[in-house]
Length: 137
Image (tube, rainbow, N blue to C red):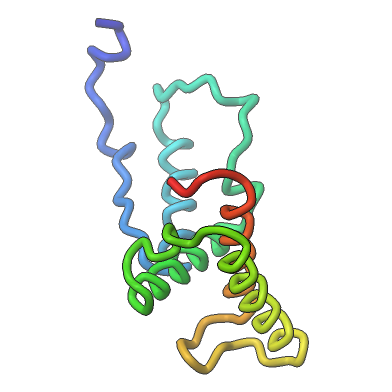
């Protein structure tokens, strides 16, 4: 057992990860940074690694999660994993295009569920990416 394993863990390193909204992701990122700053003895050899929260806005992750949750409620959990082939790819492309056109025409929010059209376009594009870059896991 290493010396690090023998040391008691500090309470300030425990983070409650209960993400349900954009604000929760932003709050988590803040808590994570504070815990990392205040840990004192915390050591991780990750200085050369990329911090995902610096690459992508934290709100993006929350928005995508929220969109996936709405999709699961509307179409069934993991329904997106059933998509296969060009026909389904085209359905996602069409949906993406409809949301982009709404956004382009100044309609920012989809009246159906109150979500931003641009966020929905991104989700549909991710589904196309998934269909064209590997298998669904």
